[in-house]
Length: 332
Length: 128
Ligand SMILES: [Fe+2]
Ligand SMILES: [Fe+2]
Image 1: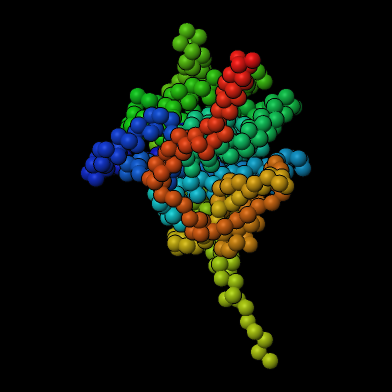
Image 2 (image 1 turned 45 degrees about the vertical axis):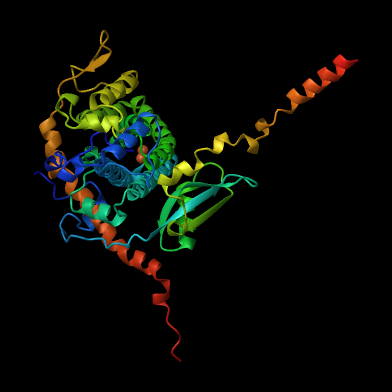
């Protein structure tokens, strides 16, 4: 999935540190000229320290979102209705974990180890997409995630794939290819419920109502309140503004929801035909901040599950690392 | 904070995950080494670099590479090699290749034989 359009940054890190303001001006000019020409930056290249820091943050949080994002769906594999849906869900969850691996590798090329990223996730220092702090209550939630959360992530990932950092672009190219299957299987499951029995329709409508607020949060706060995105845009780390991506998502997907007779829980949601922009009631950004900082319904559970996996997988990792250590010769 | 004491996931409840709180720290190197992966799409084609995997050894790197890079589309073979064993030029030394395009004497297009043939044909024809 799931490069949440919004990349969390600790507020006190928003000011550039002293040394980050003093990159070699000649090298910085060469670097910026290269990006302006549309060339990619590769791991061995000189890069401003702030570019490196921001990219690690972006790719790392994207990686965590893939791994954590697989949890609410993963728990539904055994309960997915029917054999075909189970197979598709297993395949999708496997893809998402694979996306996490690809992204950890891309982030590692910038100098942060995978272990350090995992530790920062477990300690809560590093964030992941806020939508995964909500539970998947019914099978309809899984279809809403598979269709609309993946769709939102695709809007973001397709934009990021045109960014300036080579390893991230290459990972995203592969990811986007697999996401097209996620979107299609999600849409298919969504349509099945929307065109099904009254009970199925009601279940889907309930799930849509629950997920609409997190979906509106997905791309992050409005541009007018966002800090420090100009430089990131120039460096092609951030490829589109939060508002632009949100608008593109609404433009593509609201019609696909409404054509099936489903409704969205926002009376203000409407496209302004003169400006081409969607209008909607202001999402609750205080709630967003509360959830991202640990106050959502599933924050603790997500991290506990992740922690349990690290703890209980440790002996397997160790045994594989050192296969000779378990061999014993016959004593008699 | 309104964290629930039970989960919708029965496994989480069974393991009593919401009660335990022991922090876990992963040690450097615990997630193994990285291996570069090369994918061959069909017999006779080159193996092409497609990315990398983390693995404790080359044999398992192959297993993980199969899961990660060959679960869809065609593949007939994979190679893996430790990332640390790849030797590459420094990205900064890119300028050593800069005048490759100017070496026309290395290219078929650097030799204009037809012009000379046509000139020759024209001159012998004119003599007649
Ligand atoms: Fe993904
Ligand atoms: Fe996905």
